[in-house]
Image 1 (cartoon, one colour):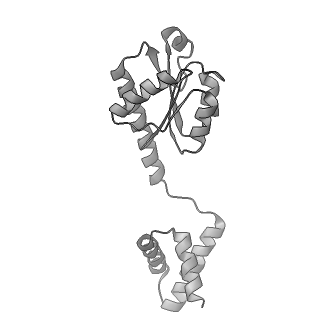
Image 2: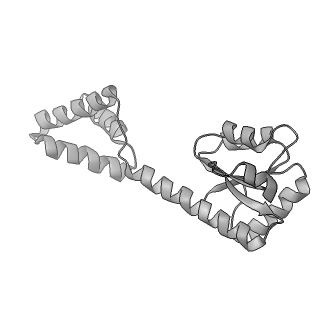
Length: 182
């Protein structure tokens, strides 16, 4: 589920937007009235969407955008005049007065974009540091020596144990080494 943080100077406005999004099936993580509160909420999350107005009591949207953790997208809601000044930035925007269906469609599109990015990141194999690679190599060598396995068989054995026990290959290699060296 994609995290959504809503921040407007008038908390009533933020709650109204939250209600619209909740009715359309979205889960809203937080409703805030200051940029600092929004940043605090976002810091504990991996990614998500911040929906905000142009100006909060403590900062404007561009400052908030610059302070958000990597992985967060922003939806700015402001008058057409203000939006024209910031055209071309990497901030999604909607002109006020707001049309409910435009808000829902825009948030749906942003959620799909974040979920697509998550799937791509999961598809990229995790890079291991040299110590982790050495640990896996040592476990494979021990299996090859004691159980007359080929390197490929030893690798597949560690990989299968890892999947069966829902642990990482490094942790499984550590378990193999600790059990077999007794």
